[in-house]
Image 1 (spheres, one colour):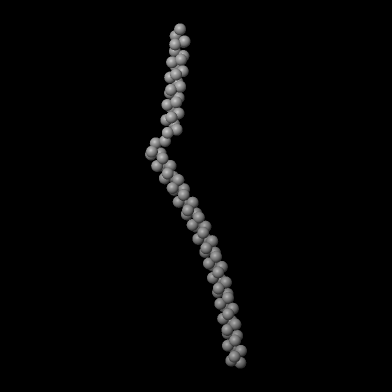
Image 2: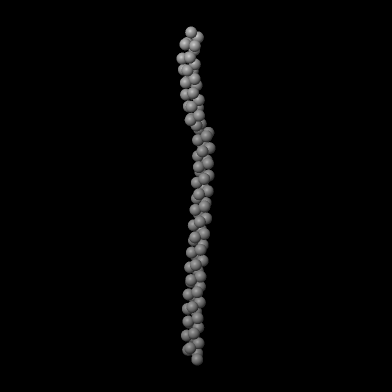
Length: 90
């Protein structure tokens, strides 16, 4: 007789406790939400920094290459001009 009355009560109690425990685990507090947002912002800033570094490096290489081209072209034209002057003076 005791078992027949207690088993439904215990089952109902355990079910209610389980539901309350599951709800407490899935709900996040506002404090945790703010922490999560802070971590995501930090990671986004890191990603932006990496992208900026990569772009700066690519731009630096392009500038160096273009500058070298310009220097060589200028030197070539300078030599041509010097040859012209030399030809005129001879």
